Image (cartoon, rainbow, N blue to C red):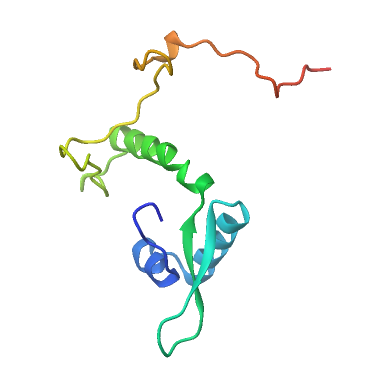
Amino acid sequence: AVNGVRRFDDFHRHIGLSEAVLSDRLRKLVSADILKTVPYQEAGSRSRNEYRLTRKGWDLWPVLMALSQWGEAYALGAEGPVLDVRHTDCDAPVRVVVECSAEHSTLTPREVTARLGSGAHPRS
């Protein structure tokens, strides 16, 4: 969906899942508010739905990029990466980093302190 695939038949062709499994997964992504359905109708055909990313879905993009980056580093097959994601303006490869929101510097796990957040509940 991030790469512009919106219709069931296109997902089916790109991903290669059975129609039943694909239907179930799309339904779950819609239920989780990651995708939304938008009706469309081609001339002479019945009304169908496209699947488009919601804001929540678009916010998963950095997570998907990070997983892809990890896979390329540690689980890449001999064929090479499935996608080659590059910055449109300069054609450099894209990478995901964790950075300080104030200094915009890249951080390692040793440079980060994790504290309980406001949603944490003490154990009883």
